[in-house]
Amino acid sequence: MTMNVVHVELGERSYSIHIGDGAWDLLQENLREWNSAGKVMVVTDERVHSIYGHRIEELAGAPNSPATVVVVPQGEKSKSFGRLEDLCRKMAGAGLDRGSLVVALGGGVVGDLAGLAASIYLRGVSVIQVPTTLLSMVDSSTGGKTGINLPEGKNQVGTFHQPQGVYANTDVLRTLESRDWYSGMAEIVKISLTLDPELFAYLEKVNDLGPEGGVDIQLIVEAACRRKAEVISIDEKEAGPRLVLNFGHTLAHALESSLGLGEIRHGEAVAIGMRAALSLSKQICGLDEGQYRRAMAVIEKIPVPDIRYDQNLEQFLTRDKKRIGGRVRCILLEDIGRCHVTSLDDPGELVKALALS
Ligand SMILES: NC(=O)c1ccc[n+]([C@@H]2O[C@H](COP(=O)([O-])OP(=O)(O)OC[C@H]3O[C@@H](n4cnc5c(N)ncnc54)[C@H](O)[C@@H]3O)[C@@H](O)[C@H]2O)c1
Image 1: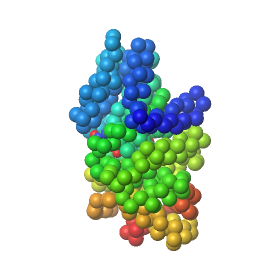
Image 2: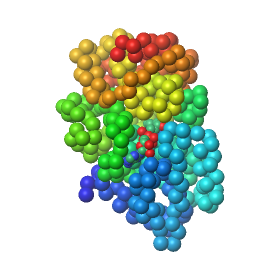
Image 3: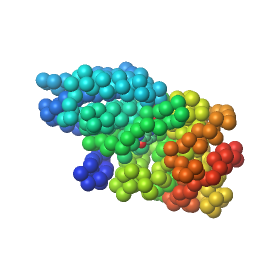
């Protein structure tokens, strides 16, 4: 059994990320203790429940008071006000109180929705993140960002609510669809480009980043979590250093919103966004041609769907929640492992860079 632990240092809100095939066994042990102290609600989605229902019942089962299990529809559409209200009402119906615990067991959608509900129900109850996709293991489960979407844009409503702990059982990645695997891989590439040249060199060496490509998943999930944990520890609320984690995301969020939520995987949109940001990095902050090519070669290992961009894209770019004083914030790369945070007067520059990439 493999298990690595990464610590997120945040004073009294510190917690650990447990990574490995033993993570759910440890979770089960810990849940037994929590369950005897207060009520527990496990939130998951239909697909995860259809594959791991039996294991989830085992996790949630407690001798005297089994946890309540709530199953939401899979996919981005569950990040809505309607679903949020429904979940909060189920919390009330199950009698959750200030001492209760919410367990978000699924991908980034479940993590964001259940995390948000936990942060506002009774002005905040504890949450544990149990990520089951590659993307949620390396990105969304750590750092405390929660959220739902508006028709006006993605993740436009949300909170910061750090989990009490993260339990990432890498064994469950075997059942991911290939597109979801690559979607998570895009976030790993992002972390390597912005924060970890050593991880980047590893990804450069592996020819095939796909599910059958033989990548050392334990190694890269741990490395990505470690880098993210370090950044969060120094900048919990994204006032400075944490901004680099948005590399590729300005365009990605606008793309996802303009295409219609759920049409493209988040990581696919990030891969497209990173290509455009790289082109702009050459023009604006002098990214060297050789480093540009190396970075692009690794990003191109992530297959992305052939999609059409329309005028909507610029509109959504101007609505980006990270805009400041009418300018669109954008993260560029000076070198592999070194970023430059800038803001663009004209969001059209990103759209042009997209065409060039
Ligand atoms: N909060 C943050 O910091 C943060 C960071 C990045 C992304 N996000 C959000 O995360 C979401 C994307 O997350 P995601 O890619 O995990 O999407 P997702 O939660 O929609 O999961 C993708 C699909 O995989 C299925 N699935 C989950 N685990 C599985 C498993 N082990 N085996 C088989 N199928 C499984 C799900 O049912 C779903 O159909 C987006 O909404 C994005 O905005 C949030």
